[in-house]
Image 1 (cartoon, one colour):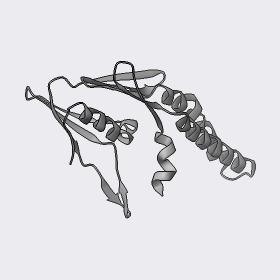
Image 2 (cartoon, one colour; image 1 turned 180 degrees about the vertical axis):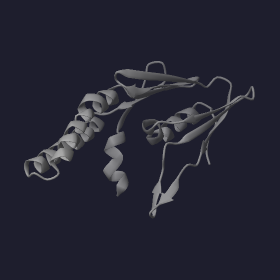
Image 3 (cartoon, one colour; image 1 turned 135 degrees about the horizontal axis):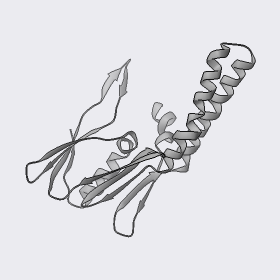
Image 4 (cartoon, helix red, strand yellow; image 1 turned 30 degrees about the horizontal axis):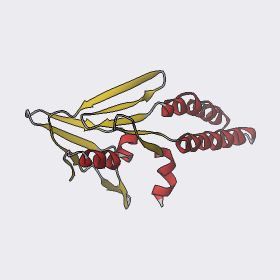
Length: 170
């Protein structure tokens, strides 16, 4: 049930690129979900302000909801993951300060996912996933995946498996 409620916040379009890569990008449904959150929060705070309920707080809530269309929604348009057999490129971050991380997969021995799931009030909670990357030269990296990558990590893992890479879940 909770998955159905929150899945629009992680919707992605998945396409194959001409270079044989996999591209995961934020979908329109994701923008729509955040737009609905903005409209509901703004309407509720405005209504409570008009009914003189917690007026100073409602002004603060209303102006803080403006961060959704000003910062969150434009940032979602730039969020994407481009996977090739030899590298993963993650574009994310705020629209005013975008970040681009490149994970080099050359000389990859294996990728293992560390289990980060825990239980809270009887519900399974899964924070951002952690991938441990081991290379043939003995070097190791620990990658904390962002929420978008965490939601679609199985698609990325299957793409890498199909190209002969070892990706294991613990």
